[in-house]
Image: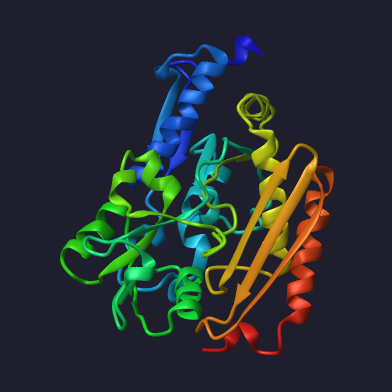
Length: 314
């Protein structure tokens, strides 16, 4: 395989969004590949691709097309051969890939928890009645409405830096971000602290970076296999199969988290009415080799327990 390695003359092209966090993730994938194969930085090219989800900031994602808005243009470039791999935040990824693409490489997962971020309030419990909280996540909004129906929710989109500026401008008293993103950007100090998963179960695949490739690109497949983190892959198999069973998207408040301990796997899941008036939780335990079956079974169970119109309420 050595003779077929990327080189400065023929670099491996890494496609990514252009936000600071997305670029960090692309650089991390490059670093892992450099270390695994002893390659120079010049053997890789970072290709920034503008995606619709980043260009439209004044509307909620559910109003303009959901999760695919962060991936569609990148996947089109991958299929066309303009890039060789695509780096994604896995919580942004639809559960189905376009024909010809495959997603089977994940870096080791970061902190899965949500972070509570506020200039003046110490914790979620300390938010005064009627306080305004900003979030673009339907899951976070529904979870918060379930626990604190007195709070006022406003739409809050943009990258980490944009959201921090909105807080400083007083648009909201607090917001939530993924702890993983803050850690990766060296901004963990901006959070008042992480929120326990028992209080707010995170989004499916939160904290995980995935690398997508063309299905018939065997050289790239072999390279990515060298940096794939097996335990993360097992956990995401359970979570994303759970999500797929629910047909989840940005329009549906769904949370899920799988943990492994040796050969044991524990999956927790939650679905909520969009207005936060009701939540249905469940869990399944089994073996890591049954990750897909466990995820599907939990999704089917929660779906069977949801009354008609559950996901449309509110």
